[in-house]
Length: 294
Image 1 (cartoon, rainbow, N blue to C red):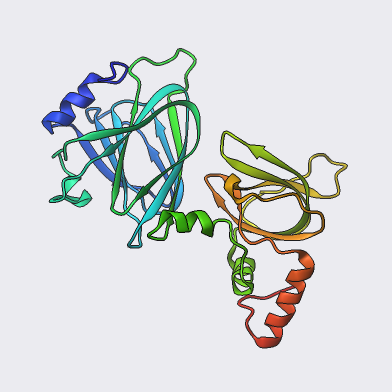
Image 2 (image 1 turned 180 degrees about the vertical axis):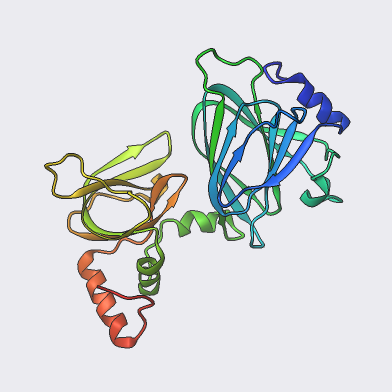
């Protein structure tokens, strides 16, 4: 047993008598705080969105996170953690086959905890693949650093995957079909026109990062692209793609599309702009364009 973690948490879990306050995330962002009128213990929350953020203040006890996707089949739960100077332990709860997460919302403990990782500071993307409902625990170290801010933030993303994990590995990298490009144009978190100024590798995140100069914004969620300085004509931004996809630098103008995952822009479909003009012209003539263009 790791002595850096609160002993009472493990003892109470083993006895099944911990104080357990249940709740759900309001919207896609959760704020977990201790209630001074209740004994400190384990706070249970059930995620309501496929992506969002959990903010845990005044760290004490543990937070129990129930992940129940809205779809059936295998899924991948990815998250990042920022805990400042505080060491945080993340564990997975092993649920007996005769029980479900819903029956675990009371005072009864399901039993075994399996350590996933411990982290301090900023944890880059970590993913867990599962075929059934997932329950995770966040537990802080007992002794806090004098300069630490008593707060832990977690960004999370739930993604449906094929039965074969290898299929997802290939899915992330294959070229988009014309229909997929049209769908990406109409539904992506960002749709922009621009070029590559640089391509770098982020080994820590196992990502390639496209440094993009943007000449036109069709759509963006929030302020994703910004000017480097007042003199810059174009906007700039960094778009990530998994390193195993082997993306190489390309000159010319592209239509970049993608989504926001864990606070970062992820590349979706990115045809050359000339090719995109051919695709959209053809789609308009055939009545296949799913949204307005222009």
